[in-house]
Length: 493
Image (cartoon, rainbow, N blue to C red):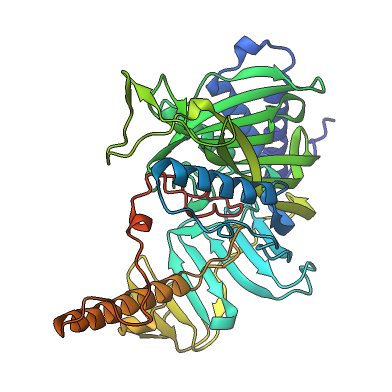
């Protein structure tokens, strides 16, 4: 008598099929030559790798700090600025302007928990301690397939939107792209977080993906080099992105370098002093058949500075026997006669303390119930309302509409630590700028009255005005670069 074979749960069967398919796709890497690697084949392996991770639960610690070359960069920036001022005839910059003898980045760890379930929900929590079970949530963002729901419990405020600034959590394990092709160079989720395959596919669709090629590392490992270009509308600059995938680890990413380039040559040429960043993954662990995820990621912001070869002054760029000029009429520096050095300006390290794969199932991560008094700002429908009963934020029934625009605090619900780097305060900058403008108006008014009464000098105690200090500075390098961010700092104009 024939026996009926034991049934296999549908979920396990699907997982088994995906795992076998992923092994077949990644296993052929050693059997085929370098010429067989195409963009389509790379995308097929990446997508199979991502689909094998049906659910995820990771605890990540982020630690920001000064880069290894910060002090060298600070002094080099000062030397460059003084040489540039001499070249343009500007008033020399104060010597201490770019010298930072003490660290400016708070060396305090930040704790995150990142989860993804089989239903498609994605949830990110900022915790007050590394123990997920005992910690309280300081900020959370959850995507249910339609809307990002951001919650700040301490402020009793929830925001509903289509996009969300992301911490570097999913990139930390090498599952998603280091930055988003959807939103330029910033790590912003427009919908679900962008996977590594999405990033490569976007470059291929735009015709900005070079043919992948196999290379050997210094220690003899075989890796796949994938080069993609993208244009950042907000900064009006092009970037070259070099992604290194390890063939022995099922195309797990091990290195990513993004550098500013100029769209002039065929297809791109370097800029004189590019800024960018590099990402390095390490401590890979096989979490499923042929699927390797990283447990450590290092993110480093870089900047290149030029110095005169003779150690004294820059030389003008000569074209057709005459000095080349910028559109504004200023002379151009001949950067071919300079020595360029790349500096590691700042670094952030992401360490995974717990990584659980395919254990969450389909239990929903979104749709929390919020207490009475919680203010909900729906940036999609342009409504703001306050909950009058315990209710979810989406489709709340017990609510009171708030029509007073002053009750909306757009942007305040975003975590100040979503990306590493300096925590600059926009409000402080605006207040300082207003103070400077107001002071200028008052001094101008007093001077005008003085001159009207017969005096030709500015008021006693008024600041002396040096017209040479107001000369245009075409290179726009008077602001030190930002510390490491997943959104690289704006390059020089």
